[in-house]
Image 1 (spheres, rainbow, N blue to C red):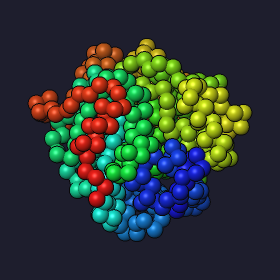
Image 2 (cartoon, rainbow, N blue to C red; image 1 turned 60 degrees about the vertical axis):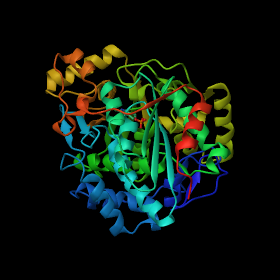
Image 3 (cartoon, helix red, strand yellow; image 1 turned 120 degrees about the vertical axis):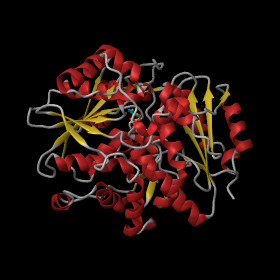
Image 4 (cartoon, rainbow, N blue to C red; image 1 turned 30 degrees about the vertical axis):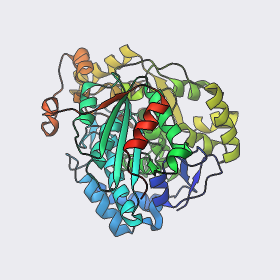
Amino acid sequence: MDYISTRGSAPALDFAGATLAGLASDGGLYVPREWPRFSAADIAGFAGLPYAELAQRIMQPFVGDSLTPERLLELTRAAYGRFAHQAVTPLKQFDEQQWLLELFHGPTLAFKDVALQLLGLLFEEFLGRSGQNLTIVGATSGDTGSAAIDAVAGRAKVDIFMLHPKGRVSEVQRRQMTTVLAPNVTNIAIEGTFDDAQAMVKRIFNDGAVTSRFNIGAVNSINWARLMAQVVYYFAAGLQLGAPHRPVAFSVPTGNFGDVFAGYVAAQMGLPIARLIVATNVNDILHRALSQGDYSAGTVTPTAAPSMDIQVSSNFERLLFDLNGRDGAALSAQMAGFEATKAMQLTNAQREGASALFTSARADAEEMDAAIRWAWEACGELIDPHTAIGLHAARASGLPRDVPVVTLATAHPAKFPEAVEAATGTRPVLPARVGDLFEREERLIELPGTYEAVADYVTTHAVPKG
Ligand SMILES: *Cc1c(COP(=O)(O)O)cnc(C)c1O
């Protein structure tokens, strides 16, 4: 499988190349040249497979010749063998219509482990072949950072520099990053918001003075391999609820549009999906874009669901590309307009195309609390604030009673104990496997929120290409 850029002018790459590249050289994002498609009979044949085997089957068409089926299966078994639940992503039932897909049984208690545990292994595999070094520069609003650091800590030929907005991630999230003391891990707290940090990371990718000396890699969901790994659990849940014979809806707590885009990919591959509900908090650029066509960035309001405190959703570009008839030149012009003004109107074709599969909803702080309370009081489940936003949107969706609605549980409730306790009176406990987090030593550096400070630090401390 070949990978092409959403902006139409970067060279096509194979899967290994797209995995190591992150952002394309024309500023676009890599997408497969076409969507592989499974027949209903293929999908029926996946029923009952263990997760690691299902993952190999779903991902092989994207991986192409970059890995043999045997090798890919070894990697999926290694990645998902580190999960604390045998089912990897177990499905729970709330009531006749509402379901919960628990994606937080990985090492850092957030859904990002599902993709990043595999990505760390893919980096090691492809760097081992090329003999090159990789410098990962990432920005995190909380969960990406810890999941990425866990996935690459101590691995050969990879350095990671992880930026987070100082004081805007939860203490559990910060400690999960800063207590990893492996020498190839550097945590950087910057003054500013997540969007400021993400803008700096994008700029590093486009800075010739940096990219001529270092291979800069991405662990944010601009990296295609992450989205690919997330497609698998849509199939896993769909199969349990009757795919390919019964369509299922998914409600997805959304920030950078990566997780819900993976659902879109599953639909393109043939999984019958009744609806994808894009759930946002008050940072609602995606809700405005999908309901009114208005994609304009406001200022970020910090909330109890910090991984969704985002005003610019990188992966939305991948959807717009498809909805534009995959016209890279037209999308490049549209995105240049957005980058200049921080606002754009979706075209009619983009709005109509999106409305065939997507709806959206926005939850404020009270609606989020009410969803946490409902899950606890009516169903005996503690859920985290991000998941609660998804559950609010799922229950408000108005879908017919015979369509199962699966809310993606994106973080373990114990990552956000204050918000959960405030809503329910019950404090969630950290699973034993991470229980000593508050006793461990922390290591991080602080930098001002300027591009020069960050670029200078990275280029003086990273290992050149080799
Ligand atoms: C990252 C994250 C999200 C948002 O996912 P996107 O792929 O960026 O849309 C939602 N919830 C939690 C807990 C997260 O860590």
